[in-house]
Image (tube, rainbow, N blue to C red; front, side, top):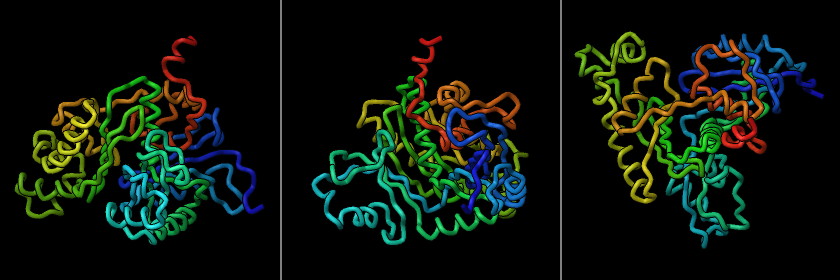
Length: 350
């Protein structure tokens, strides 16, 4: 055998700004989280050393790890299918080209049912609402090579967005929440927006505006000499941008209000919470600004009871800080929802 029996499990979420990692007693629940750590995305050497020192490696010196990635060109899009055309060979490639603006032969794609994340069965063709999930095929190879160089053997490689959406839907089910949630994955150049509930993913929309679009506004508002100065200040956590927050997110808000308005008219439901991910701690004010501008609350998760229902134990002192919603995506990587206990059932058992 190329790899020896693994005694530990690892999971890692590679975001645009930071990487979250966990050492687990094993991959399958019940499991104990033995260590949680966060690295800046740029600290490849720090991550390499951490994984090199990991226990339970195979003879090739790699730590077996469940990995979540957020490639810039990822596709996670909800789509209503034309059931009359599902079995046409040209139908899906046509969707990829016309709706998603991608070249079908260059992407690896999977189609999931939007309500529960199970794999879509095109032979039955009975489900109309689906999630198209994929990324460029060459990026998969490049990512695997990069991970191996860091001492990581990707036992599983997933789109972090898909894992996070699944985790959030399950969390909303667990808490019995019926309030729709707006999820924003904010990158430098783009923002991926989703509206979801305990019943699944309802809306997805990519928005061609990210944090980089705010930097010229910072330069102008503060009278700085160039965009480099504005960029350094913007990410430095030394200046309070709260007062000009509304101005900085104005363009993004206009796009969001369009999506939310459409959703609320179609469903009769109102968005109750907003969650922004993929932001460094220095930009946490963006979440508060967007939520208050939309007239909703920022999403706060009480992760402990949810993890307990999934047979995942996090002992006191393991997390480097508050075990908040920033860690949801990482735990969603290893969570198994088949035997999860709803919050109401858990309370009845006590």
